[in-house]
Amino acid sequence: MSMIKFNKVSKIYHVGGEEVRALDGMDLEIEKGEFVSILGPSGSGKSTLMNIVGCLDTADEGEYILDGQSIDNYSEDELTRIRNRKIGFIFQNFNLLSRLSAEENIELPLIYQGMRAAERKQRVDEVLERVDLTSRRYHSPMELSGGQQQRVAVARALVTNPTILLADEPTGNLDQKTGREIISLFHELHEAGNTIVLITHDTDIARQAMRSVHILDGRVSEVL
Image 1 (cartoon, helix red, strand yellow):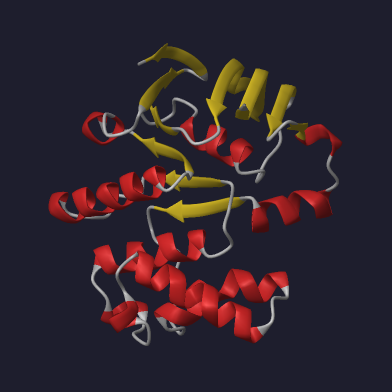
Image 2 (image 1 turned 180 degrees about the vertical axis):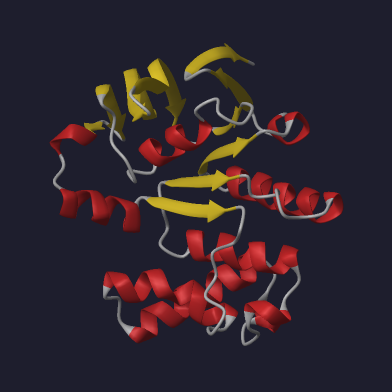
């Protein structure tokens, strides 16, 4: 079953009186449980694609079907709920709150969901163990290495048990060895059944996925 389906999706921006098609009639299908990389150079439409897949933005033309439901049918409140529950975001810059510990950063999405404290603690304990950071739970981001910060970000994405993990250049700020460790973690998560969409400009990273989709000028140029 398709988890993500784009039918002729376009996103149009107007810049200086000119029409720019960030996505141009894109067709794309990602199955449940797949590990797919989206590969393309800067300006190819990767970020726009990520924003639409993650329900952070909407298409101007075409249809986006998420888990069997057209996004057009959802209200803004429902889209917020989907972002909080169905999609786990992992960013290049980690996006951790510096004043909070690793544990508190991970717990935050569950607080937004209104989950009870006891259940929150159990969920946080589980994901800390999963990313091998139990011993660093009380450390602030400034006390963690780049790789450890990204593991906290992965744990925060996992803690809500999302349907999709959406990773935007997750190794971009890491050295090669640490980047390989994070990709290895993604392989473990994929084997555990997670659907993963990895956005990158790095061909070597893209090859690590089960399938690689190349995009150029807002269109799918090839699927490997």
